[in-house]
Image 1 (cartoon, one colour):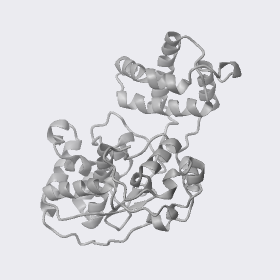
Image 2 (cartoon, helix red, strand yellow; image 1 turned 90 degrees about the vertical axis):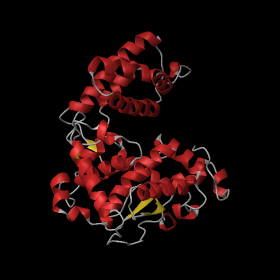
Image 3 (cartoon, helix red, strand yellow; image 1 turned 90 degrees about the horizontal axis):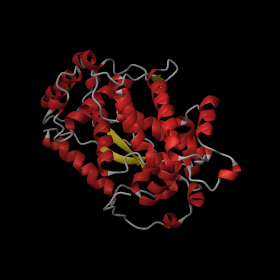
Image 4 (cartoon, helix red, strand yellow; image 1 turned 180 degrees about the vertical axis):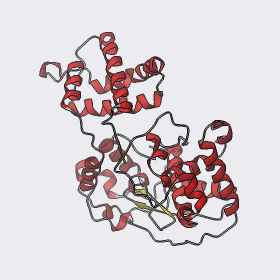
Length: 345
C-alpha cells in the first residue's frame, strides 16, 4: 500500500470479504480521484510538464486499466489505485499492483502522457516523426519479439515495450525525456536511441507555450459506467494475460518440487523461490551475461506457476538450488531465443 494514502471516506465495501467484493459491479464502487494519493501524482505530472514549458495538461479519470484513448489527449487510470482495499484485491488476483507505488505510478503517467501529447498535437502526422519512429497508424501486432540488447530503443517500462509499436516507442522516449534528473544524454550516449531523445527534446522546445489543437475532455469507459462485476473483470484479465504452459514445463516443475499428499506440510515452493530467487538471479546473470532484470521476469512467472500448482519443497535446499539454477537458466534462454517465443501485448 502507498504510504500517505488519503481516503475520501471508508466505503461499506472496504470491509467486505474478497468473495463478496468480487460480486460488486465496478460502477457500484462509486470511486473518484478526489481525495486519493493519485491527485498528488497527477499534480506532479502537470508540474513536470510545466517545468518543460509545456502548456499541455492531460485530463485523467478512473477506468479499468491504464490507457490513453485514440483521439483523446487524456489518461485513464485503473480503478484499483483509488483505494487500498482494491489494491489488496488486485494484488491477490494478479500478484502485483501495476502503478501501485509512487515511483511506478509516475512511470506509467509519463508514458501515457506521451501518448496524450502525441494525440493533442497530432505529432504522428509529421513526416519527421514518422521517419524517426515509424507510422503511428500501423496496426498493433498481436505479439512482438523483443530484442533485449538493442540500443535503438530507450528502456523505461517492462518487456522492452518501446519495441512493440511506433507510438509506444515515442511514448517511452517521451517518458525518459520528461523524467526529472534522468540524465538521458549521459545514460544513452553512444546509443542510436539518443537520436530519438534529441528529436523529442527539439520537438518539445517547439511546442513549449503552445495550445494543442486537439483539446477533447471526453472520458472513455469511466469506472462509474462499467457494468461488469469485479469477478468478471478479473476473469477477463486472467484470460487475456494467461500463458500457455506446456506439459513439459509443468512436468519439470513437478520434478523439482512436489505435489505429493505426504509433502503438504513442507515449505511452499513459491516461498522458497522468493527467498532464494535473488541469489539465483544474480548467479545466472554472472554466468550468462543476461540482464538480471530479464531473469527476474522469468523467475516471477515461475513463482506464480508453482503457487498455482501448490508445489512444495521436499529436497535439501542446496541440492534444489543447484538444479533450479540450471532450470532457470534454460527457461531464460528459451524465453529470449526460442523461435516460438512471443510476448503478448
